[in-house]
Amino acid sequence: MKILIIEDDIEAAAYLGKAFREAGIVCDHASDGESGLFMASENSYDVLVVDRMLPRRDGLSVITELRRKDIHTPVLILSALGQVDDRVTGLRAGGDDYLPKPYAFSELLARVEVLGRRKGAPEQDMVYRVGDLELDRLSHSVRRQGKEIPLQPREFRLLEYLMKNAGQVVTRTMLLENVWDYHFDPQTNVIDVHVSRLRSKIEKDFDLPLLRTVRGAGYMIKDDRTASA
Image 1: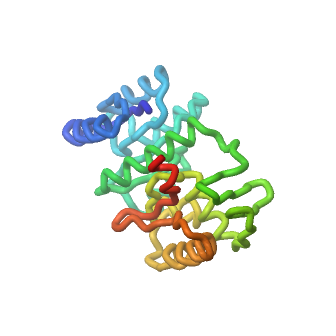
Image 2 (image 1 turned 45 degrees about the vertical axis):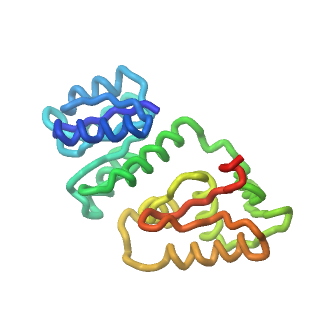
């Protein structure tokens, strides 16, 4: 994966670049909006990480201009402005995700990886499989070992998102934004309740657990037999 970081804080950009490279991601850096717009227009990137407050041209203006040019590289906006209205403004300007500062790099990395997969793998897979669990998006059905598992609509969306990102940690924020369409945390246990119900449905009467809680990070669905093969 190759990304462009548009960030005027040189120290922060250097830290991000080093951390991304350690994660196996190739990084370019632009220190202002005009340079970032030029680099994003002239080169191919999987994801753009754009600071909202930039010299010469602000981040939202960069995104808006890229979209006007019909450049649809996924964009993750970083900003100290983290109120709901700020996030809505960023997303409506053409951003694909919005992460307020301060943030944990592990979450930033997870979000960048998700956006990168979104560009490289369009929504063309009709069937997701993790081990012996199968989700058919067309028929809206879920089966494990051939046995149909009835799910409520929200449980289906939750499982669909987890299976789409199988083997990757999915954070609570990612679930809120992609399954519940919240761009803020309502401070409820809605996710925990739905994950618990989903886990009981897809793992009851089956020997191998698939859905796990990653302490302090989020959730992951994964087939350990495949991982150890």
